[in-house]
Length: 224
Ligand SMILES: Nc1ncnc2c1ncn2[C@@H]1O[C@H](COP(=O)(O)OP(=O)(O)O)[C@@H](O)[C@H]1O
Ligand SMILES: [Mg+2]
Image: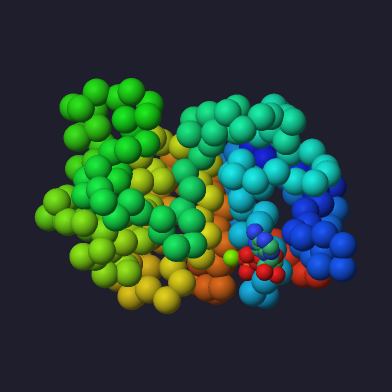
């Protein structure tokens, strides 16, 4: 059985010369299919940087990244985008909803990229609406939503295409309890169905729910 994620000696820096910031130092990490893993670490330790590399949004300076045995770090931009669309549901830190699109269309967008029919899209959106307690919000624009609702829409969008891997960057940071509970339940549910989940979190309840926790400290991976 291949690891869903295999990182080998990944390095990532920002800037150069005297301003060079070496964020990830020889990070190696393997995640098996169906695992639910918490990533913790101080603010600025490189958690989002790591998630962006795994999600194919950014590339490492050195090291290797394999997804289901296929090397990703040597791909070009187009291949990376296809990889991301086909395999990954990404919940980014600030939701990144499209404010000009209604809630319905925000969630439908990744399925339209995958050329799903309108009927398939509609069914999927309403299934997600139900599990996320978003019924009645389909015609709202993101700016009219509460933080908790916006986060649930972002998660529904991430789940829309039934990704094999969910990457969630502090999905419950500063949210209401109801939203936290819904998110946790939905993650548990899809994890039970075999979806691999990586969650960056400061929340001890979430970390406890996960199969294991890894910590980034001084740019290195620490197994907690
Ligand atoms: N695009 C960027 N350009 C320059 N520095 C960055 C960039 N992204 C992140 N950093 C810096 O890299 C470090 C790690 O950031 P980040 O991965 O966002 O940490 P975390 O998510 O753990 O808070 C921080 O010091 C941050 O300021
Ligand atoms: Mg972050």
